[in-house]
Length: 456
Image (cartoon, rainbow, N blue to C red; front, side):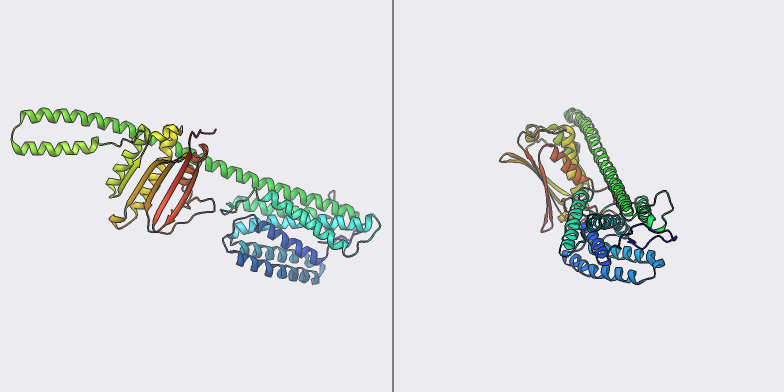
C-alpha cells in the first residue's frame, strides 16, 4: 500500500495522497480471509475457527507494522509476509488442503486489495476533494461503512461459487492460473508506485488510486468468472457421470430382462421334457433324480412378482446376486405404486438398481454371514410412495452436509454418484431422499408424492 511515497524510479506523483494506514490494511486483509471462511467448506469446528480468527487479526496487525518498519526497498517482502499470514488463517481456520488454501488466499488477497483501495479512494476524496478533512468519528464511520458494504457484497456473490458442504476442487492448473492472475493484478495495480513513466501508470494522486481500484476490481471479476466456470465444468462432469450411470443401469435392466425371459422359456420347456421322461421311466432312483432336476429348474424359474414388470426384473436379478454372495435379501414391494407415481422404466431401474447395488456392495464386505442382511420395502404411506432399503453395516460412514455419502474407495473419481443419482431421480418427481445410520443399520428412504410427475 504505497500511497504517497512517490515512484521508485525518482519520478514523483503530483498531489500524492497519504499512505493507507497499516492498521486499516491489516483489518482489510483479515476481513477478506473471514469472508472466504464464511463461504467455503470448513473441516474444523467453530471454536478452532474462532481462535484462529482472533489470533490471526493480531498477527496481521503485527505483520503490517513490521512491514512498515522495514526499509522501502523491502516492501515486497512485507507483502509476502502478509500473504503468508493470510494463507495460515485460511489453512488453519478452515482446515483446507494446501493447494485449496493457496487458491482461496489468492482470491482473498485480491479482494483485500480492492476493498482497501476503494475505501482509501473514497476517504481521500472526501478529505481533499471537497476541502473538508475527515475527522473522527466520521473517518471511522466511512471505514466501517465501506468495509461492511464491500465484504457483505463479496460474501453474497462468492457463496454461490463455493460449497459449504464439500471441499473446493482445485486442480494444479487452476491454482497456477489463479496465482498468476493475482500476481498480475497486484503488479498492475501498484505499477504507478514503482514508475510513473509507463503507459499504464498515473501521475496524479487521485488518478493513481482510481487506476488501482479499477485494476483490482477487474482482477476480482476475472477470478470470480474463473471460479464460476470451474464450478460449472465440475457440475457438468458430475451430471455426465450421473447420466452415464443412469444409462448403464437401464442397459443392465434390459440385459437382465432378456436373460430372465430366456431362462423362463427354458424352464418351461424343461418341465415338459421332464414330465415326458417321467412317464417313460419307472425306476424310483430315476424318479428321485428327476425330482431333484425339477427342483433345480424351479429355482431358476422363480421370479419376483411385485406388480411392476421392471421392478420384478431388478428384484429377481438382485435376489440371485444376493444368493451367490450369501446375503439374506427380503423384499416386500407393491410395484403398482410406481406406475401410479408415473415413474419411467429407466428411473425405476436406476433407482432400485443403485440402491440395491450399494447395499450389496456394503454387505458383501461383512465377515459374519449372519450379518449379511438386506431389506427392501415399497409401500404407500398417506400421500407418499415410500421406498426403503436397509442393510446391516459394520464400518464408519462419512456424509457431507447435503446427505451424500463419501465413497470409501481409494479412487474417488467416478465413484460416489450412486446416492446422487437416486437423489436426482427423486427430485424429478418432487420427492426427497433421507439417509440414516443407527445401530449398525443403514437406511435409505425415498419419498415420492402421489401423482408425482417427472420434471424436465
